[in-house]
Image 1 (cartoon, helix red, strand yellow):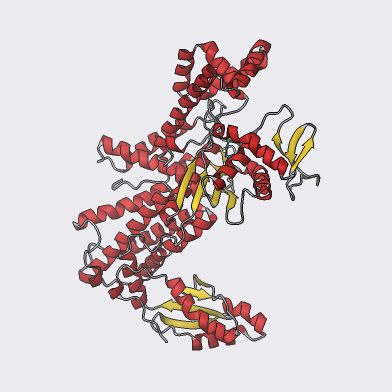
Image 2: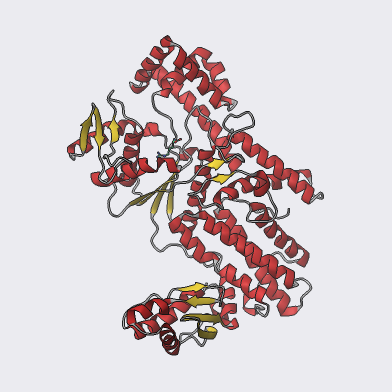
Amino acid sequence: MVRPTAGPSEIGVPMDLEKLLADRLTPAFAAVAGAPVDPTVRRSAHADYQSDAALALARRLGRPPRAIAAEVLDRAALGDLCAAAEVSGPGFINLTVADRALGAAVVGLVGDPRLGVPRVAEPETVLIDYSAPNVAKEMHVGHLRSTIIGDATARLLRWRGHRVIRANHLGDWGTPFGMLIEHLLDLGEADGAAELSVGDLDSFYRAARAKFDADEGFRARSRLRVVALQAGDERTVRLWRLLVGRSEGYFLGVYRTLDVTLTERDFQGESRYQPMLGPVVEELGRLGLLRDSDGAACVFPPGSVGRDGEPLPLIVRKRDGGYGYPATDLAALRYRTGELGATRLLYVVGLPQRRHFEMVFAVAAAAGWLPATARAEHVGFGSVLGADGRMLRSRAGTPVKLADLLDEAVARATELARRKNPGLEAAEAAEVGRAVGIGAVKYADLATDRHRDYVFDWDRMLSLDGNTAPYLQYAYARIRSLFRRAGEDGLPATVEAVRVPLADPAERALVFALLGFAPVVVEVERTLEFHQLAGHLHRVAAAFSAFYERCPVLRAEGAVREGRLVLCGLTARVLRQGLDLLGIRTPERM
Ligand code: ARG
């Protein structure tokens, strides 16, 4: 039976063409193979869509692939969806979508505020551990990457309909706080706090460290101070809060500049797990998972071996009785699956900590804190490098201060906006500069495969052509200006009446790019590889440019003009939504 295609009577029902085609091929393949077969329908350079399933099946059935493909096509009911369906090459099935079906797909997209991306049927509670800078220390570019990737993750998962918990696992506890508090006291509380609030966190930390290294008396005081902090001594705790509060204020400023969704409510620092550390280690003991190694309590997770083949321990209690980073992460994990009910835990942390997380997850699984219904993933990423191929440094050779870096991005982009459009008012140029500068920094990060290192390069990230934020933002602004000139603010009101022109290959190519947005979003939800989304948005913008060059919009007439405006409007919506998922703004003019 031939099912009807979505027609103009089904406004707002997005059509997943890839899936529709697959649904038609599936029974035909099953009949030929005598068993279920995934028809693997994909976009292709040789046709609108292509299936290569006959090739794999040929080996299994011992029949020529072309004969299989031909028989599948004989049995498949594709008439209403395809203008052509043919066997090609060694046994590919090439499908050319009928204009009518393609037009119906566009109409479905136009009427769908979600652009074909459904909300998930079964929302999960997803906890995203990201940003996580350390108190009284400057945020470095590693924290920048974590913040950018983690925030895009939070935005995308929320948009899909999941419950998202943002956990900013602030480094706000540990032995350095003894020396930091003593240093604060030496400076005098007022002066010390003032020094911290100008945001020069590193110099405060370095000064404390220098004293600690040089001065035996200071060292002794610092150690006593840690003990007082752990014992909950009132004055010490107050000073600790002061340090943490000042740093949090500074980080929040960076988040505001960066336009990320993290707020003060999301700080879930290491300190909150202190009361749980003892019980966590006891529980590991009761479960028989602990082993003593030189006085330290360790777990040897199965499968964790070093390069020499020796089993690697996760140290949960040090020889001096203190608990460290691994114990804190175990307690946090247990709390997150147990108290918070998270079923997907994402740790957006640099690749050097990969081993740490592997071991933490293995121990948690062994202890039953990571049940089969939940999963933990280390969303690792590479480093940001300077032009010299080494870790990014300032001209003075010191680590780059994040706030300075972002200021520079905004300054450069404001300059760019002024040059590009001298007619912009100063206030608007500043606003555009902010959107473009911050957008460029974020996009340069998200557009690279996160597993790789990337070189921080101002000229490239601010370039108006290429796979950059300014290029995409400019494409969006250009469409908005087109609509202003058309005297229309959005899409034609009566979508039913729209006949989408598809005579030009550039129009078809643009439509396929627009339809491709939804599957990419769904895929990135799983892989958290945002460069796939960025790359797709870039393809959309490039397809739009090609379309715009060949197909006049405002100079066209009647239904063609209307239809082309629809394609322009959809392009703008996809670009805006896609960039919003990446945490990047789209100014209305540039
Ligand atoms: N504060 C740590 C650092 O700067 C990152 C923490 C990452 N999150 C975690 N749950 N361990 O390296």
